[in-house]
Image (cartoon, rainbow, N blue to C red; front, side, top):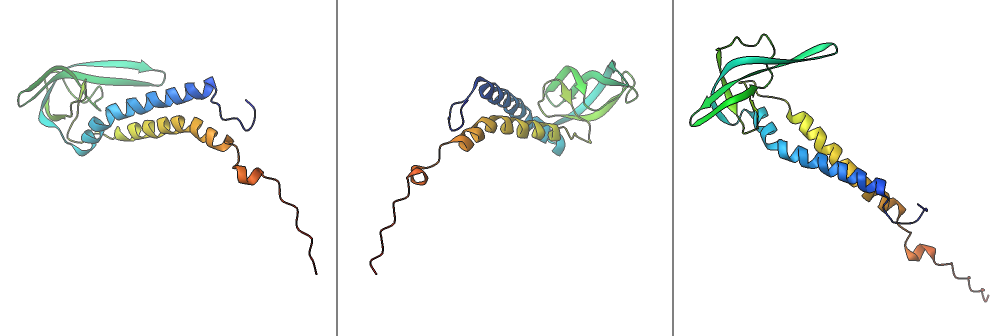
Length: 157
């Protein structure tokens, strides 16, 4: 691309599309993440049934799966956010709330996952704005700054 041109490259479009994808993912999860932080949702009881763990090099991540009951809401196969292997025993029930997020309910302590969602939103907006900022930087100067200076008139003193 030549300097001074205002065309976007294919790379710019891929970067913007990736940023748009991140924005969409963040916006989709922002409501439930903020609700989990604030402890807003349908309160009820989570009954632990089984634990599923995944081992990564250096650490293990576990999720307790079970049933959530709150008012008319019954979710038979849902994970308890933030639990580890020792959090429950099968059949144990605890107070929990449902924000509407698919696959998870939360304990009384809520969650700080909103931080990751906000970071995704900021990163996505930055990637979407990158090609626009490049266009703005490369936009040609105004026509007034390109006009040649007029010769000065000779003085008549």
